[in-house]
Image (cartoon, rainbow, N blue to C red; front, side, top):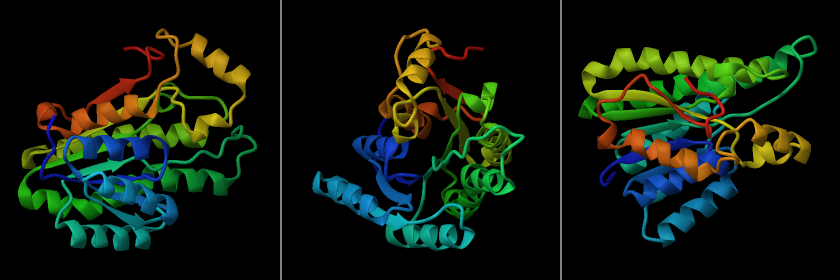
Length: 247
C-alpha cells in the first residue's frame, strides 16, 4: 500500500484516530496536511513527522466554521500543490436524552460531524478532478449504524455520513475518485477515556474479539481505502468494530 507522491488532508488530526491516520499515511509514503483546532498539538505532530523524514504541515481549523475550512484548505493546497486523499475524521459528542437535548447541542454536533465533511469535500474536489484521481474516507461510527440511547445527535450525524459517502461515490466514480467510510466500534481514545470502567467492561462483553480497539486499527483501514489496492471499492462502509455489529 504505497502512497508516495500522494498528499492527504486529515481533519481532527491533533489526537486519537485522526493522529493515528496521519502517522499511518506518512508511514506509507504520503505527505499530510494536518487540520484541527489545537495549533500547538498540530505543530508538535508536524515537527515529529518532519523530524522523522516525512513531510507534514499544520493548519489550524475549526471544521464547524465554513470560512476556516476554506482558508485552511486553500493554504494546504498552496503548500502541497494538491490534495489527493481527504480523511473526514473530525468529530465531537454532546450526549443527552433527546427530550432534554438543547437545539444548540444538536446543531453543533451535526455541523462538526456531518456538515464539515460536505464542506471539506467541496474544497478539495477540484484538485482531485484535475488529476482524475482521489480518495475520500469518512470516519463514521457503529452508532451511526445501530443507534445509541443518549446520542441522537451523534448517531444522526454519523448515519448522515454514510449517506453522504454513498452519494459522493456515485457522483465521483466516473472521475476515478472513490468515496468510502470506516465505521469504528469501541475505540480507546480521549473521547472514550472519560467513560466509567463499568461502562467499558459492559461494552467489551458485547465485542466478540473481547477487546477495545485502538486508533491504529482504524488507521490501517483508512490507509487501505486510500491506496491503489482499494481502487475498485467505492460507496462501502468498512466496519472496524471487533464484531460488535455484523451484517
